[in-house]
Length: 129
Length: 249
Image 1 (cartoon, rainbow over the protein chains, first blue to last red):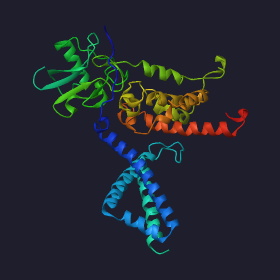
Image 2 (cartoon, helix red, strand yellow):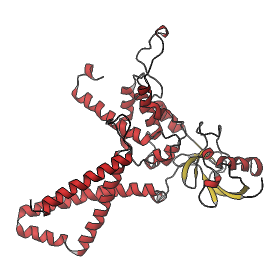
Image 3 (tube, rainbow over the protein chains, first blue to last red):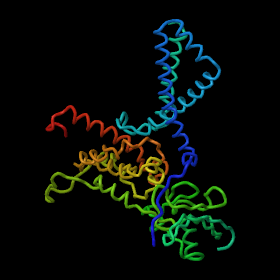
Image 4 (spheres, each protein chain N blue to C red):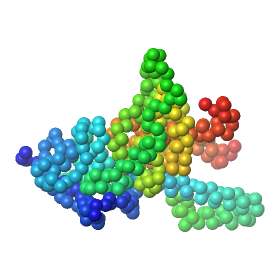
């Protein structure tokens, strides 16, 4: 009897195309950045509890395994941010110009803005303002 | 045809027996002006008449010869054999659809979804013929021209991992065509379409992988259309929340 063969998504489908892999990395980066937000909130809580509690948590954050983990999270968050910046120009619901802005230009503009804001934050945190 | 030869590795599925699809290899001669579809037709005409696939216009208009070639969803009439990477041309049916036979897949699910977004001009009341055509400026045509190029080839569905994971998602082409009619100044059916697109199975399922726009042979950009639809759907929802019924349109 004739019958159709149903579609089954193969395991590891996201390894078959580099853009799928980048997409998965972007999604993982989103989850990791949310989790790191919880770490920051907990750090704030320790700060509220007092100097000893804060120093204790700072000590944990600066141990080599946690530092390596933080670097991995940072890498994923970078991928998340950069891939979203790449997408921003690809959907332009509000027309700012007569012709749509090329996505590469929107991407570059966002990168520059990101660098400027990051530099300002770093200056405020470490520059003694 | 003598000279260069190429190996076609084609996925076969015989519905009579059921079971899993199998691979079959054909070594055929080719010339630089042959596209993958020409190779498949050579196999069917000269080597194995049981090989089954869809095709019609041979010029990227009808959208019926889609398949996965060396892993990428393409129109087989638009890809030269000489441009295929590697020595073997690996041809599979499009991903994310049930296989009817060999390279022929079933599209009924898409047709139902397309119907649901009313892919035609909707008017609350037609004006009398004596009043003439519905005129548009070039700018009004430009607003929907890109999405109107869709040929329903389904490559975007084949490339979409969201649709592959959950086939209740309305998908890229149906969304792009909905957007095409919403942006048309002659149309008055935006409310109904946005209602369908705002459901759980609609545009909010899209995670903006963007692969649909990469593989589209007509540069329709379904991914961009879906993101724009998200903005329109959000504005519709805000209007429903904030405005009285009489002022919503």
